[in-house]
Image (cartoon, rainbow, N blue to C red):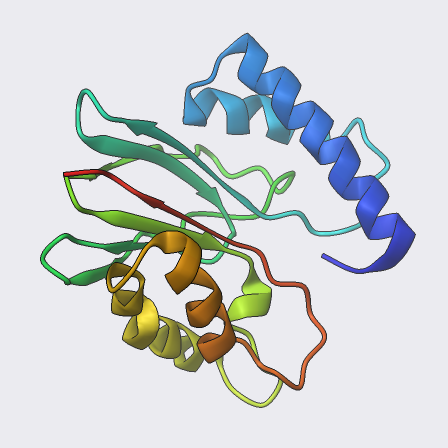
Length: 174
């Protein structure tokens, strides 16, 4: 959360910590558990959300822990759109237990992960932004991700707002 040098420094610290956690044990629940404990050691006054996902093509699933981040979207090969669970509290606000969730990820499915800048608008609630995103999400299946993802971002984001937007899409090949 935030902007400028302070937010960038906090993000760099979190990225380094995340990489260290992954090196110790890449399981989503383990990574977030360690990160929650480490958070108190850093001088970070900002709120940090993240979603950590591991795609397992052998089992055909995504294992996810969501720490207060907007819900990832799955566009099924059939065209159906699903919001993955939103998860629990942001990093450092330790819940009793973080839960890793398994979500099927089959051939032809597309996963979209994004930052809140894509869906938030000052004058509307977050659910309106999520509805706008899920309405446009099937557009990701109409062309290559390299072509369709920028069009989705342009269609969904608030053009009048200067918030940062990051969106990543992954499609499982049939």
